[in-house]
Image (cartoon, rainbow, N blue to C red; front, side, top):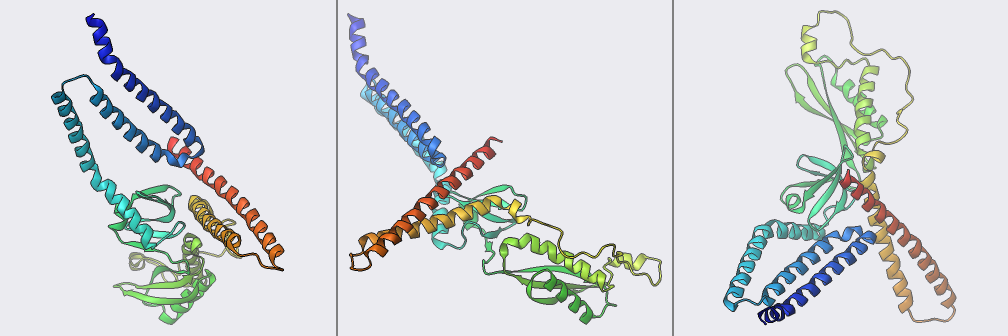
Length: 355
């Protein structure tokens, strides 16, 4: 008799808990199927499963056939543990979330921009609620918390152009006018607009010159820096101006000797067939293109909505229909491209994590 009473006593809570466990398992399987189509929704699954698990624990405690005082103590303990966990993580969690919202509202930079954040440099390849993803000069992906980004100065390379510069130190025996002429010509040969020369420093043994110019296509920033250095080197050698260190000049025991390389073959320009930026910042280019496609898709949707809401007018109805059909065709093509690009980025990110 006691066994039957005990079984009846626990049967109700066990059935409810079993049912909740089945619901939790089915929910997990549904999320797994959903993530196969939407890999970026992993965070939503984790948060939902966490909340569902906490609710299951609380309902289990409530349904346990124990004393009310003990039940209250267990629930109080769970509340204290949950409050402590939230309090310990809330500062960083909420701080990054608020910083992400702030960065979105400020719009100081967007996906694809070159940025400097302290010692970090690269192109923005992704923006999230809690972090910023930057593709560096080594083609690697750098993740920075949004709180770090807001607490440090951020320098953004302007789309309209940026100044590219390089320095060189030359001896006092070389006329300044000749140096400036050679450096200006080198900057023009490197494809820079409106070049100018600074005298940065008058050292004990040499003069430090800095040549600068405007680069219009900022996506070629790394190539432009390298090309400017090469053009400066070639121009100085072609003009017979030697570039040697002060120590070398002070210690050499030669007379009437100019240390410049001999010209073996006249170069007709850069030997690089492909810009290194195409390889280095491939993910940032894809992310930027994806953002532009999404903006274009939103604009097409607005135009379609305006056509749908417009009142019919005589003589222009056929033109309106053709316009709407063309927009819908563009919408379909662009949407397919966006879905394909999103899947490629997600697959690349997932393969990077697995590697």
